[in-house]
Image (cartoon, rainbow, N blue to C red):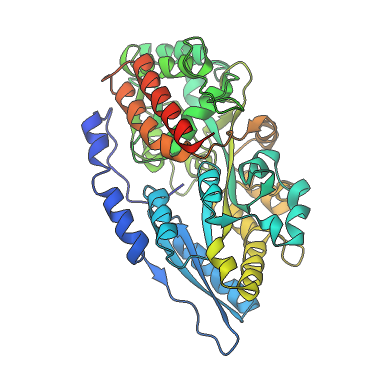
Length: 454
């Protein structure tokens, strides 16, 4: 999830266009990790004697809201001063690796389940459960997929800043006008419905976000695989896409055919581009972070507000990818001493847990931005239900949450993902076929598994 300048929507992007977006990212991240932030940073509020200063590192989504939450936190806890540093989502993984390797001061940071095993095994982040008795108390108050995503080695490392599913969204009016009564239940049915819309004049009924530099595109693909009842890899770290009959192979083959043979699929570089394109009425289906449904149904910005609906992920099981992005405490913070550890705990619980009986920050994100959450009690909060109910079916949402599951974790997943995205983009651009892309991805996966020792 990131906020960046939108890129012009085009019917289809060549691989060169995709690759051109990534130039200089790693180099910029390296410089940022050692020398300072790529974007804005806010100095900590000055405090008197006894003030504990924390460096808080995030990716640059709604930085103003994050700073506002920090300001409110510091009003409640004036003896803790927080400096905010934000970096591009696209370069966040590389940036954090460089910060950790160079021991650039970092006390609390955003993290995700795709990177947690790598960061935890390296000793860069620490389990909350090792330092705070209250951490275990949130287990029953957190969706299972979110708790799993925040855990490694049987210990929980964070509490959720944001938790969501990657969901199947569609324009109900477009389907109804075409005589289609219900959204597709399987990917094959989606092909049939899309071809029917094509016959009525819609060129590319399905649109998704695809850009090589975005970690989210693998998560979107994984959510589609989960809908088929599949997994990317097994509990022993063995890839599950070497067999052509696997859910992974079937789904990539379906996507490649949709883009290059049936020509029902187009792609744009960012979720904001998808939302804008859907609002033109030229597309009927998409797969996105669920919170984008709020933007699609926002009457202030969309002339088609109210037409967009959530459907269960197509496939045999209707499962989907559920995840958490969360607050970690770093080993650097622990090394600074108990006072800093206590301040980090206070900060994390304020931002992700209960404060005076309320989930202050998570509720604000839900109400102001439509963001998903991992804190189960919020789903029953009357204000939250009233707000969410304006733009989605809460019963259907609850069912999809029940069917959501997290990705399994491996230490090398985040590194492998950077390679896989290149192969994925090549396949959708028609430069390689699905089998070759998955073959290359399996070779790289096995190299990394051997290197990191399972």
